[in-house]
Length: 141
Image (cartoon, rainbow, N blue to C red):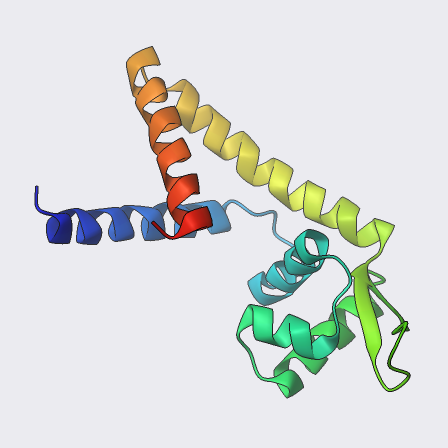
């Protein structure tokens, strides 16, 4: 298989698996965009609304709407910026972190059940591939 063929096959597989995992989220009020923003805040720490918009690759007015919905639900809190009085920092609340855990648990359970259906050799192959993919994502090799 050429690198070009592998590129298409891998991209397609990752896209389909990601889509399938997204479908396994519990039915609830949170949209995928809201979940993504909340996850970015958990992973990135406290961020300004502009930083969060940039990270999520949306326009600031769109992020303002997303953050407002998360705040209404008590999932995100604002605090003053330590060095710029015009700015605020956004961070997930304890309730927001619990909500993320709830959604992640549902997806993890689905994936664990699918992995359990694989042979030990297939699981070992997936484990090796996971390590390689993590390296690609982290280092951009």
